[in-house]
Image (tube, rainbow, N blue to C red; front, side):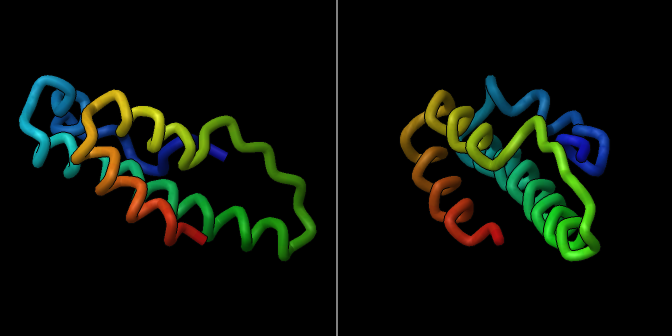
Length: 83
């Protein structure tokens, strides 16, 4: 499984030096990508396929913590609902 299904947009790459709102926007993009992956993983497993995942939503939590408390809290709230 790829880490992300779309190329990483510039606003995500540039968010590390921006405001908390920009950091949250970037993390939300990553969370959305992980939600797409979770749906695909479920489908693949249902079809009897073996799946290897290199990156997970845990990575988003780790980066969010690095980006600051408000970014972390926002991301953790969204990560709890990935299925």
